[in-house]
Amino acid sequence: MDRPSIPAGGRPVTSAASRERVVIPNQHGEKLVGILHETGSKELVVICHGFRSSKVGRLV
Image (cartoon, rainbow, N blue to C red; front, side, top):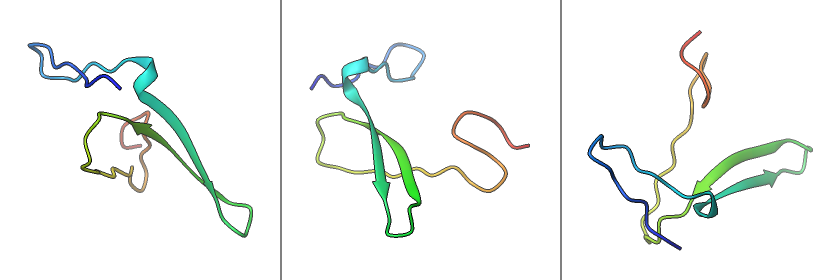
């Protein structure tokens, strides 16, 4: 996969091919859902949104 390029603004630009929706179900029918951003690195970072916020919005 292509590595993201970083423009002058500092935010990485990723192509649609470098993202994948991941769903991990458990035995109770609940699902952990996330987005895997593939960079070609062997390093791993997990970022989780917190209480009273979400991955798409600010603190409410």
